[in-house]
Image (cartoon, rainbow, N blue to C red; front, side, top):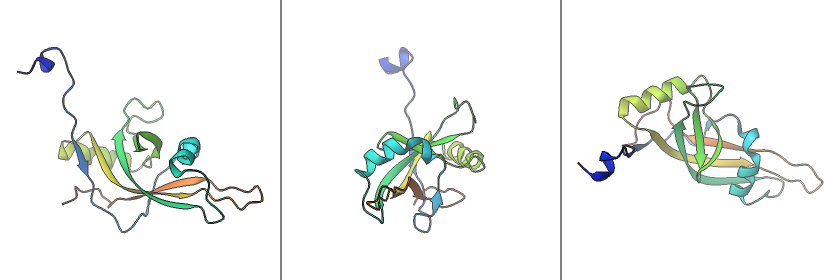
Amino acid sequence: MALFGLFGGSKSKKEVRCKRGRGNTYEIVGEASYQADLLKLAGGRKGEHGVKIDEQATLRPEPSNPHDPNAVAVFIHKKKVGYLSRNDCPTFNAFLREVGADSAVCDARIVGGWNDGAGNEGHFGVKLSLSWPPKVAT
């Protein structure tokens, strides 16, 4: 047994890659609370059409969430940017248990964040390329 295990070290974490959906069509929720981090991730607001920035997202259960113990948070570059919808979280958590994983990754796209130059600005959003129900990529 490794010494690390003898002294209560955490078990290793398993992460799986999710099968892609048909483009970036799965919309997450709650991005309004994370606009400052999305602005940084996008590198600022970009003209009247906004941005379309391809990234990788990590989806991780958040059982300590005070609003929903089934919550699944979405992270891009270790910054929380939103959540899966409340209705989809039980299915996603069951998927992770079935495959023995603690988290999953999938392709993501940051969108929006337009600025028309006249003081009007749009919010950022995030869309995932995620098949539903979720499956492991092969």
